[in-house]
Structures are given as structure tokens and as C-alpha cells.
Length: 194
Figure: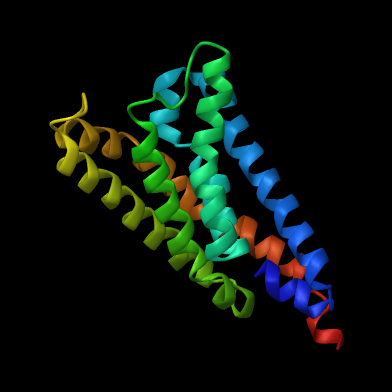
């Protein structure tokens, strides 16, 4: 969707890279900050219930498309881990980090596949978010199943956490598309004037 808006405005290739980079960095920063805010307000269970890091990654996918969103999805938990490790309380925990990186990469890529469709019709954002959520959570669970002998959590434990996070997923499924509909209206407003 963002690419469509830049093409519409006849932005140069160099400027497109700068804009994409700026938006990606902003989304990564938001993905690092939101969990900290939720954990301060609601404690660690709040993060498991509301899944705050997923919001910016889903927005990034729908907005930026697969390539740029993949960067947001992979780097968000990694940057969070590195910054919070320096403060002595790594988030996510080191053992969970590769699983979250894979999960959020799937969130980003699946939602990113719909970016051009969302530019044409904003209602595709609802489909993009729900499919990304299902795919991402499914990948997390499948990876835990495959590697359970090497990690301190089991598929049953992760399934319980997934059920705990239904509130966050439902909120994302409603709010992320609404945010994208507003962004689409802003970004694509000049389309009808050409």
C-alpha cells in the first residue's frame, strides 16, 4: 500500500528507499516500546494476553509489503531482546527469541502479501490480519512441536499461551485493519485527482 502511494506521488527510487527505511525503523521502535508499556502497566501476563509486539508488525506487513515487512518482523523481537538484555531483563527470553522471530516473520510476510490488494480495497486488511495471525501462531506451535526436546516449553504450554492471547488477537483483528483504512485514506487521497 505504501509503495502504491509513493508511485502515485512519483517519488524517486532513492526517496522510496529512504521512506521505506524510515517507516520500518519507526515500526520496529513501536514494536519494542509497546511491550515495555504493556508490561509496565499489566505485568508479564499482560504481554502474553495482549501480544503488543504483533500490532506494529501486522501494520508493517499490510503497509509495506513482504520484503520490508519481513525486516520489521525479524528485527522487532531481536532489537527488543538486545536492548532489554542491556537492562538485565531480556524480552523476549533468549530461548523464545528464535521462535518469535520466525513467528513474526510469518506474520509480516503473510500480511505483506495483501499490501497491493489493500491499496485497491482497504477491506482486504481484515483478511490479511486474520490469515497472518493463524499462520504465525501455527508456525510458532509447529516449531515448538519440532524442537520440544531442546527447549523448556511444550506444545501444550504454548497452546495455553495461544488461548490466553485470543483477546490480543481479536483486538488486533479489529484495530489493525481500522488503522490501515485510515492510513489508506490518507496515503491514497490524491489517486482520484490525477
